[in-house]
Every structure is written in structure tokens, then in C-alpha cells.
View 1 (tube, one colour):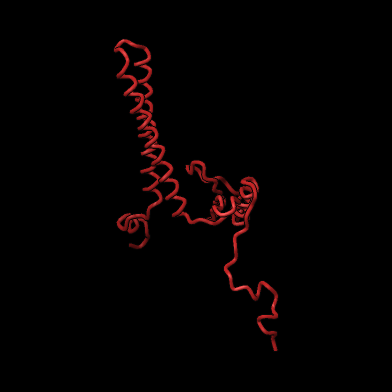
View 2: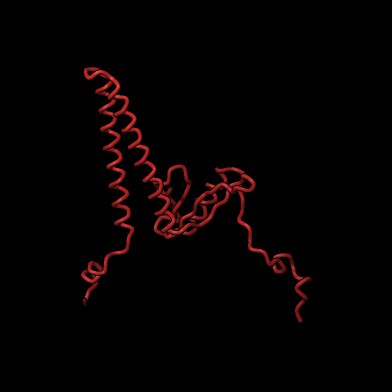
Length: 167
């Protein structure tokens, strides 16, 4: 006969949800995320997820696992949690949209400053070149955003039918 629940060890008697492991430093949490990603990889390698800005996320090479390092708002400690591919895509798109806005604001600021200068001023020309450069960078990031959304989305049914043999 088994012992009553009140006599079982603490883990068996605890009905609360498990709490995540917390780390006191960002470096410790980053190492834990890298270790978790490497453990999920068939080749035992991990890589940093790009285009997330200041967010720190790691993905398993040749695997589907991704882990993000976050600040625990309660105690100021750091936690590591697994995130889905859809969440990574959403975070990347949000970061890229923010960069586009920053580039366009910089282009607008440079244009306004340039129009305050005399027409033959060298500074005016430099500011207008800077504005054109910022608009070009925003176009590149927008293209990256659009291509990323197209590549990550599901293949349309007509394209899927042409690729499947026997249809």
C-alpha cells in the first residue's frame, strides 16, 4: 500500500506549476540558452537568431528549437524560455519595422535640416545625400521584411500542387 500524499516527498506533493530557473546575470542566462539550443541540435551546434535587435535568442542548428533570454520583471533576474518559430518571425518583423521607421525619421530630419540651409551650401548637399541614403536603407529593410514574410509563409495551394508528384 502506498503512503498518503502528505507523506510523499515535496516534488510529488507540490501541486504548483514548476517555476522557471532564474539567472542573476545576462551572461549566465545566455550560456544556458546556448546550452539548451545545442542539446536540441543533432549536430550539437547553435547560432544566434538574427534581426531581433537587443533581444538575445539562440536557435539549434539543423533543429527547430529556439530559446530567448528575458528579464524577469519581478526580481530583476534573467530567465530562458523556448519560443516558437512564429514568435521569432513576429519579433523579427517588429524589429525590422522599427528600423524602417527610424531610417525614415532620420531621412525626414536630414531633409528638413537641409532645406534650412542656403542652396549652394556644402552642408545642404551632404544632408540631402544622407536623407537619400536613409531612404535607400529603409527600402532595403522593407524588402528584407517582405521577402522574409513570403519565405516564411505557407506555400499557396497551386504551387504546392505543382510540386507534388502524381498530381
